[in-house]
Amino acid sequence: MARGVRDFVYWVLSKPSVSQSLARTGMRSGFAQRFVAGETLEEALAASQRLAAGGRRIILNHLGENVTTEEQAREAAESYSEMLRQIHARGIDGNTAIKLTHLGLDLNRDLAVELATSITAQARELGLGVEMDMESSEYTSITIEVFEAVRRKFENVALAIQCYLRRSEDDLKRLAPLEPRIRLVKGAYREPANIAFPSKADVDANYVRLLDLLFDGPFFPAIGTHDPKLVDYAERRIREKKLGPEQYEFQMLYGVRRDLQTKLRADNHPLRIYVPFGTEWFPYFMRRLVERPANTLFVLRSLTAEGFLGGKHS
Ligand SMILES: Cc1cc2nc3c(=O)[nH]c(=O)nc-3n(C[C@H](O)[C@H](O)[C@H](O)COP(=O)(O)OP(=O)(O)OC[C@H]3O[C@@H](n4cnc5c(N)ncnc54)[C@H](O)[C@@H]3O)c2cc1C
Image (cartoon, rainbow, N blue to C red; front, side, top):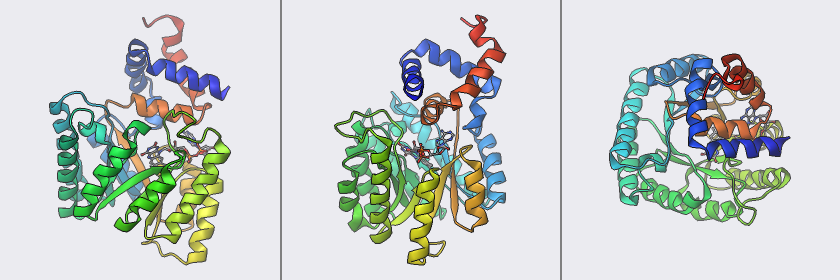
């Protein structure tokens, strides 16, 4: 079942006409709102303010990746600038997450470095932070290099590291001298077995190994998972090490495992929610479907209600 859903999702992503059709239906029929805070910054800020009122910190992300022109990259950077101004003006305890391919990495590495640096500089002036998301494995090395370049200038930048990649332990050791903030995640892209652990058991075991490296090393650990076993393990380590709330945080995605989010806050753990918004929500949304095949059921239900699967749409 899980494999069938995964193959279906990757098939949809490879067919632009099907993707575009589904994407048009998604916001209208409401299924996109399950994981995406809206298409506009205003909607995302409203969602962020609701979450912040419940004691959550925020990571605001303007969805977009693999831009094809410099103009699009600069527009993305400008939207980040506005996001930072708004987070600051509204007093939200939040930062922003950027993807380097949204800032032109496919076109010109220097452009992505320039834009990532200027976003981080602006964030620092406002007392805010920037987190670099990690994309598929073709970008891992370059993302780490760009992160290192920005981190040498500014402290307010964090990086996501994916436990499914066999290289990640070495990457963490290489990054240690920078004493960085690291968001540890399992990894959300389709990767070949020679570079990524294919089995969930191996990914989970590597998560524990890398989490130990974070807790025992010169890092600020951001525990980015909804896996209750890993959350329990992290809580145990936090208790053992007697860490205070300024020394770590949990991170979860908007709309995912809200029960666990509530429990973590009830236990007084710092929790940051990744809040994505924008019109380019489709690839992000599809990655969330792959993570939990049961999610496809509510999409199929909305599409059936819309007549999408009944032949009303071409
Ligand atoms: C804050 C944050 C930032 C992230 N940034 C990145 C990044 O930069 N790069 C990257 O590759 N990946 C990123 N991810 C995604 C991550 O790699 C995983 O794909 C995702 O978190 C699912 O893995 P999991 O650790 O929750 O464990 P899983 O074993 O996948 O799931 C554990 C449990 O969580 C619940 N769950 C997980 N996903 C879903 C879902 N979509 N819908 C409903 N329930 C779900 C289910 O109950 C499941 O049993 C990020 C995740 C988080 C939380």
